[in-house]
Each structure stands twice: as C-alpha cells, then as structure tokens.
Image (cartoon, rainbow, N blue to C red; front, side, top):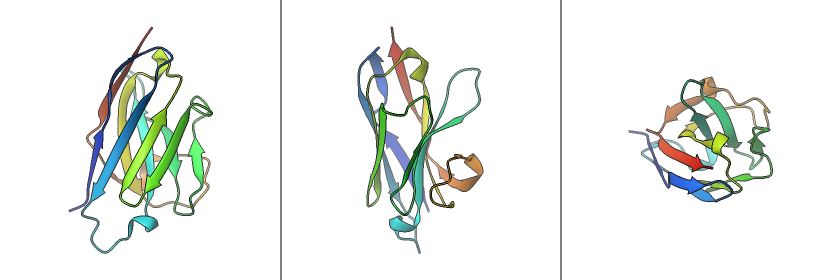
Amino acid sequence: QAQLVESGGGSVQDGGSMRLSCAASGYTGYTYSKLCMGWFRQAPGKEREGVAVIDTDGSTTYADSVKGRFTISQDNAKNTLLMNSLKPEDTAMYYCAAGSRVPGNPIMMEVDFAHWGQGTQVTVSS
C-alpha cells in the first residue's frame, strides 16, 4: 500500500535551516514521475495550509510566506523540503502529501492530495 514517511523535523533557532525528507513507497501501478508531491503544515489553532508543491512537469509552487526561503525538490521516490531563514511563525506540524493536480496551479489544495504522511514537527525558537 502507498506510504509516505517524513523525516528531518526537530527544533532550530530563529534564522536556522532544516531539511525535511519524504520517502514514498508502495505506489503500485504508478511511476513517481506521475505524482505531484507537496508539503503542508498546520500550526496549533490554525488550519492546515499548503507550503510547497512540485508538479509532474517539475514546476514548483510556494506559499508567499516561504518564497525565497524554502526549496522543494524531487528525486524519484524521495521528496525534500529545504528550509532556510526559519522564523518562529514557521513552527508547525509538517505533512508530506502525494497526489494529482493540474501542473502549475498556484493554489495548493488538500483535495488534490490523496496520500498523506503522519507529519513531522518543526519548532523554531526566537
């Protein structure tokens, strides 16, 4: 069965960097090149929001709040979110997701992502 496993969360100080990874497995009948991969996050008391997506054509979409600081990349079955210049407001549970959507859609919608990881906590202290 399809599975996404995140790793790399933890605690970092304001201005620090962190790399999150997502390993995909069990996508029988798919090639990973046909899946768009994304990262969403949810802070306490807030709704889950899209952070970054990489589409099947290699195009990327970022939330305005992370543009220029975060970079999403894909290498076959492994997805990586490199986060630089982290801020306390980046503190959240980060979820990896896989799905299908129109490449380049600037709106990151949870409904486009059928599979989700368990999440990894990122805490940025000031």
